[in-house]
Amino acid sequence: MSHSADAIFEPLKIGALDLPNRIVMAPLTRSRADAKTLAPRQLNADYYAQRASAGLIIAEATQIMPEGQGYAWTPGVYSDEQIAGWKLVTDAVHAKGGRIVLQLWHVGRISHPDLQPGGVLPVAPSAVKPEGQAFTENGFKPMVTPRALELDEISGVIAQYGKAAANARAAGFDGVEVHAANGYLIDQFLRDSTNTRADAYGGSVENRTRFLAEATAAAADAIGADRVGVRLSPLSPFNDIADSNPEPLFTRAVERLQEIGVAYIHLIEGETQGARAPEGGFDLSVLRSVFKGAYIGNNGYDAALAAERVSSGAVDAVAFGRPFISNPDLVERIRRGAPFAELDKATLYGGGAKGYTDYPALSEAEKAA
Image (cartoon, rainbow, N blue to C red; front, side, top):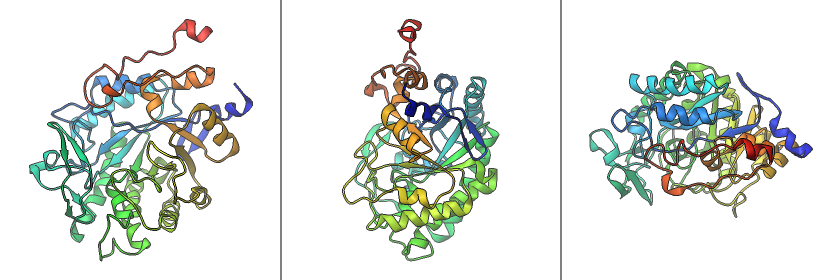
């Protein structure tokens, strides 16, 4: 291992958390919660415990309320059964010496009446229909035009971010990550392609960053800002989203997160699962310059790029997504320069242990090689 590669194995303090290394497990939707209660199970605890050598696990996106669901079999954190299920997970990770935070999620318009309580329309900042298909229990269905949230409803949704953060701590999580990326509800409020409101939550950059700031502040008030991070994707068009001028928008968004004092920002650099430097983007280092907490980079990293970016100080830590699915011992593989196991895409979403907890770690022979 080169000297620069050593940097990713240096410890890092992020807010209230002490990380033994800078390799983060990114949140990964796997659609394996209990079909009836949407609570995690022992299977989920086994999966996360296998990956506890990560410096930090950011557990999969988890809906803060029933209306926040956008995919079949994703977990929640609003019921007693769900909190108890997550306690299985956090206990298993902590028993292995790991650290784990929960990603708080409301999908907004990226849903379908089949996934909504009472079969109603999903909500969003504005009634703008997304292109794409929703993953329901009955297969993929075209997305619909959402219902715009009324002004007097917004405070109730924001309050759920605080309640969900408190529930996450009750379930044993070390903190939470507010999901403000990838075209979901908070991102829909941020971007002018999906937010056409004319009230205090729309129009100006200040107004469009208000929902993000208030939701994050609700989580911080509930559990302490030093246990809260935020995920952003300033340049990603994922889930049919765009903004006409993203640089001032996301600069102000990060300034507001700095004012709240969150522990970290977790940035998808470029297009989700796509180009790291898309045309028409801007230099994301401007966001780092206005933020004093930790910066976690994400998107298309391999071990070499991670080592280079951490050792140069461009990022404080690197989040790996799909490599963690097929490599439960990803940290060890990076440390040894061992090859990564291939991913079985057919088992990504839904199902049981196959393609979930059955990926092998390096054998003793491979470790000795």
